[in-house]
Length: 106
Image (cartoon, rainbow, N blue to C red):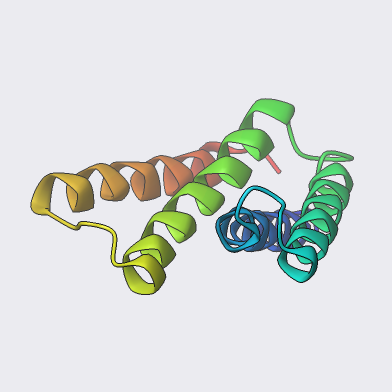
């Protein structure tokens, strides 16, 4: 269950990161509110996962899910540049996330 909480927290991190872009520096009300709610929910689910997962593992996976997902959504939603080196670097993050899950004792 703690891994599900961590995955939800990571997905919500993507929500608030993308929300910050749409909020335009917190100058647009609805995207700003959704961003803040996403942050609160993301931290809440992360805190639930930390009841039994090691802090370093959980935090790295949480940020990794958010980083990879946000990078992919940045390309899809905002036409951010994509090239082979960027894809390789994102792949390294995915490998790191998978590695941390495999070596975790929980």
